[in-house]
Length: 118
Length: 108
Image (cartoon, rainbow over the protein chains, first blue to last red):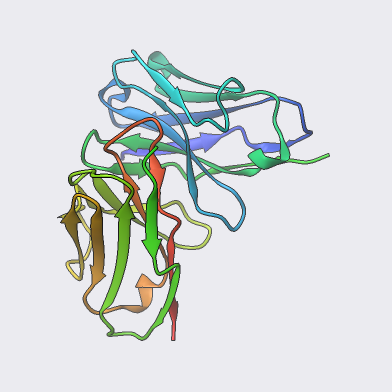
């Protein structure tokens, strides 16, 4: 069945790095824009980054630009988020999301929790 | 950046009530507006895309309307499983993709 499985979260100290991964099943990865969206504890949804379906563009929220890198491995059907220089403000549940190009963000991973704490 | 403003931020309603949630964009976004439902501890779920199209499998008591800057999500007869937080999201201009602040629907 069509699904996304998020992984890689954990507890990390401020200033350190973490790499999140999202593995897709039962759909062609390169047909969709793929996003990371996060949600801080008790807060709303915040868009983080997008990887364009044709691989031509990656965009980032201002809050993570220069620190986070989104990448894709089509052979493994995997979306990654490399997070460097983490701060306490990056503490959140991170969701990998499929964007059905005009038809909404229709498939969400289960989320992986990142806690930045000393 | 396009700002999305939802109102109210929370509401209390009873089973069977008609519920209306509003979302306003800071500029014209045509019908590039989606609605999501999120229950505690779960990922959001797409309810409505392109302002008024119901996602497959979503009950018909949910409906969306609007265009330009003003949008509405309506639940015609609130059911127990509808108590959740609802978010609007614009897909007209990226980056950044932006969400509304959310509307929490609670039991009266």
